[in-house]
Image (cartoon, rainbow, N blue to C red; front, side, top):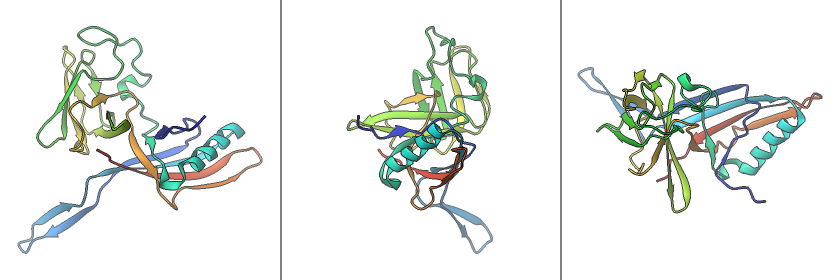
Length: 223
């Protein structure tokens, strides 16, 4: 059976992770003493996941997964593995209902952003829905039959209305190419990533079949 890309990461064995916005910024000093700022390109998510993984099956799974990525040749779905759901709903949305009725699966009914694309309005959530620093919102759509993703992280606390609407500030600002019909989700949000060549390294297996290593990746934004 052929592997379908992009694909998810293995869930087991990550002992440490870093998942942060990578920016290329420059200062632009003025003669009067002011400091201007210039950004080159759109901010991207960068990630590093550390092993060891114990157990022969887990170690073999990671080795096979990394081998099949062919360095930066294949896309995968990357995310902060410690935050698959908002903190207030760490075990998922089982049993929660939308304010207007019906089971809530993490997907908003509608979404909109402000002019600077850094404040998100969601509707169709449970009443008094809670978001906090570090919670993620993902955007999912399909272009020419291929999955596309954008990812943002909340930088303030917010509590929704009794009618299931919420507004929250997030970073980075929403990628301009995200289409209006994309689905906004709070359930396992992720982004498309590629491994960084030369920066993903696996060590040898121990006699206890543990494996050590470090996996580094960078987001790829596609329209």
